[in-house]
Length: 171
Image 1 (cartoon, rainbow, N blue to C red):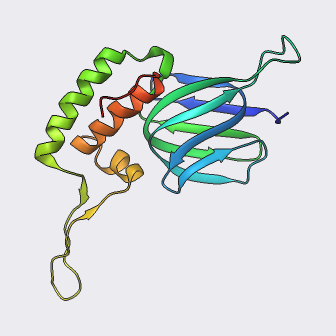
Image 2: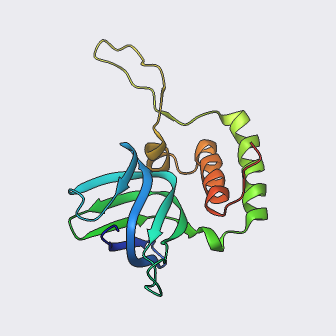
């Protein structure tokens, strides 16, 4: 049996989740990562991703299995210490609260926009010799932080919302 630990997911509007879990898994700027009790200290940028929380069973029986809670995260930061995982996001939604039809409409509109705009990129710059560098694609976490209004971010958010709601995206 895993050792439970405290997790908080906080948005500017509310505490989205606060409770004991056995495990948290999500995608950060460092890739896919899972946190267990007494994880080493960690700070990272959160991608547009689904956080999977293995919520501690209520103790109603020896056979109680943890419940999986899915949370759509739309970029932010995660801080981990020996005692707790804190996830601070600009926007987050519990999968159980997501309007699937609305998320599907948002995905269709974002994909249409993406066809015109293309992927989010770092701005072009001039190097030491004055040459202009080619645009460089942003990582998922950097899209969330630096280009939240981009078509790429909108597509990612819609897909994450559908995944967290347990609905397959149209693609």
